Image (cartoon, rainbow over all chains, first blue to last red; front, top):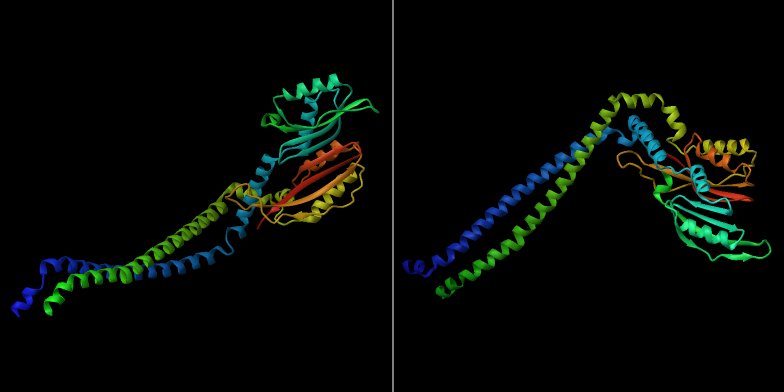
Length: 169
Length: 176
């Protein structure tokens, strides 16, 4: 018996046995904690269900919230609204009198106005081009090459103008 | 024979340690992570519901909201809680008539995606429609009438010329 015990290398085995013991302890603790978490989840789920029932269709179904949403949305829509009437008046103020606008396209999302226009001579076209490229409120995004319409004696062209934020002020 | 077994003991124990780690502790740890995540999600949900309950209480006690509720009919004219397509058509017909123009009808499309102006409130749904007018005598009056209509409308695109003008307009209603 003595010789059997003396054969076991206790010094070497002890750390391993301690680790195994710790692992068993850890496993037990994890098991215990997981069960507690599972129980907490079940309790929380039933509590949430009760609270959801008390909300009756959620906030969206609440009259006060709907009216509040209506009012706030109205304010937001009006605040974000870009009035074409105001834009056209402002644009007309900026454009020189000699410019003949045949067609005007407006895009609120792109903040752009495209004009198909004419001038009566090349001097006016150059004057207008110079003027429009130096405007603070508008930015020339693209343009087609001007062409002389010999029948009407007009210089025809089109331009896409970007409305800078300062345009709306 | 015994001495060989005892000498092999450390190897057996190390194997056992790893066996416990891989097949017992690690799965339990994974389960712990999952359960904690689930619990946190539920706690967040409960918090959201609590906040909603508080908000409903505050809204129902707020005198300004009560005042708004008294003027609900006016709000419904500007931004109704339903599409109320018939109101849009009636407005358009009247705008055309006032400006001596002929209203030939339009197709009203409700966009699927609601528009969120403010994330704390209900979003709005957008109704798109196209309009056209002949001539330019009533052009500015027509534009002003559309933009000042009691049911909120905004001209998103326009193509104006002396012969004919086309408009892409949007109107709104409260998304439920």
